Length: 245
Image 1 (cartoon, rainbow, N blue to C red):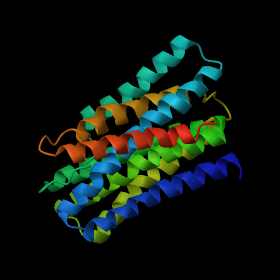
Image 2: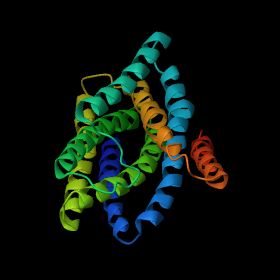
Image 3: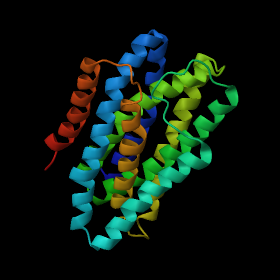
């Protein structure tokens, strides 16, 4: 496939992950929370593994100085921090009891912006290296599954119908595709290699600042559950090691 085809397929596939939210209707709240815990841990490990074992090494091979790479990683980290703080956006990996409807709109807006930026950076990676693009998409997808499960539950609890929740979650996911296509068009005029360390910063922020705190948020879980969380986290890292060239 051409690079553009990879970008389009990855964008549509990422948007389709929003449909997994429908599974929350089939599970009890307690069961869903048990399912989300290992998924969040795997996602955290995959994102950090993708950043440190794939994206940063690739950035080092590009024509970028060490200082530039460091600055771009910090910028990627900071952009997602600012997005979260300014829009009160967060990944709802733990099921809330009740949410007010206005918050659901903020979640959709924030999720749309997050997906748009994600589409840009993943497309930039595809343009530089298709194999690396596939790996980074895989790491990002592991994060999208628990996020979409949580987001769908929040929309339902916020008063949305099941059909509307699925539709608008899917539409917010489509911004990933738009960001990717825009980046592809701009790549004919601009060097997009800087997006690789920038994306690494995104991955590190989501994994370390957003997901890992949620892994240890519940202080009442037993030692066995904590051990399973660690296993799931290291499994996510190991997955990224397995797909190293």
